[in-house]
Picture 1 (cartoon, one colour):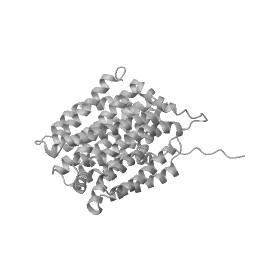
Picture 2 (cartoon, one colour; picture 1 turned 180 degrees about the horizontal axis):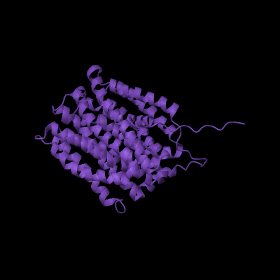
Picture 3 (cartoon, one colour; picture 1 turned 90 degrees about the vertical axis):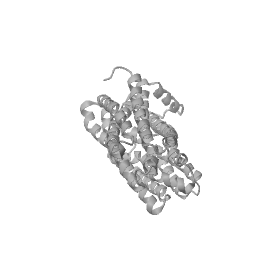
Picture 4 (cartoon, rainbow, N blue to C red; picture 1 turned 60 degrees about the horizontal axis):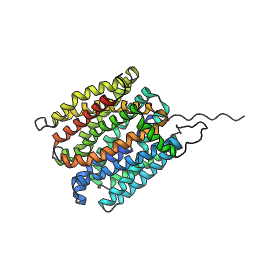
Amino acid sequence: MPRPSATPAPPGIVLLAGISAFGAVAIDSFLPLLPALVLTFAVGPADAQMAVGAVMIGFAVGQVLYGPLSDRFGRRLPLLCGIVLFTLSGAAAAAAESFETMVGWRFVQGLGGSAGSVIARAIVRDLHARDEAARQLSFMTTIMGTIPIVCSFLGAQLLAHAGWRTVPAAMAAYGLVLAVLVVRRLPETNRRDGRPPAPLSDLVRGYGQALAHRACIVHTATNIVLTTAFFVFLSASPFVLIGGGRVAAEAYGFVFALAIGGLMAGALLNGRLVRHFGAPLLMRRGKQALVGLAPLLALSGTEAAGLGGFLPVLFLFQTALSFVGINAIASALSDLPERAGTVSALIGAGQFAAGAVVGRWATAAIGHDLFQMTLLMAGFALLGIALHQVLAPGRPR
């Protein structure tokens, strides 16, 4: 008599963090390169920022496709296709002879890498209900937070010792390693239990259902607007800090590590507290903290405050931002659990579309002005809180 097949072990949180980190790998390792690209290719700062903006646009477009496709066909196959595309385009970007060609391949790289972040969030929702999903997303964010720090340091060191082309080549190597790990260790979590796949028209219907669900779209929009505050920092800080002569290129990674460390601290605290207090209460407390910290962040960007005043407030601001953002994601995914891939795609596409548009505009508008950067970051944080307060259905829980 044949033995029943064993149920595959669920994917480890470290593997999911690695899968969801393609955005960090593609973007954060390039940040120290931006001032150097201005000199290498004789382009302006706003044009150089398109080396990052192209990836963001690719991530926005790709997630719109990968989310519903993973709902229909399962998580593994779309994920593997995306990783292969990320790997090949990273190698092509490293070999590009012109700035325009490199930016084009960076867009394709975003298309491929977007599969990782959208599908990793959907896998978490496949396996866990709202509060536990918030807990797992918190731990995943904490682990993933080390990757941008490493990427920023690694990008600066590769630039200094081996040239910018080694950075996209290193991204291709990362994609190759993740492809092997997914093949060997990631089971299919979107099991249909014998149900036939939905028709292709259902892909569009899923987006309509998500957009029509008030609670889901408000949680999604809140996360997108809050994330834009971080994208302002992501896009403008190399020019403000390095180009403005506030820190050396090799030391930029320390400032970036502090910002990511705030996100990690918020994620770690949220993961420990959410089982006891629930996502809605922690989200409310995070919003209250942001209301107090946003004006302080803006003031910390003045010349009188200096870097000594800016850096501690930046850490606390990022911590509160993490509290609100993670619980908003978990709530949005739980509002429509049967459309987890589609909702995850809306979140990711919105984040990166806003980041690409606002990042290019912010880089041009801010220049080297630290106060302008902190003012914009604070403004987007307060806008996200106001959006949730006004539009969220029902009374606060």
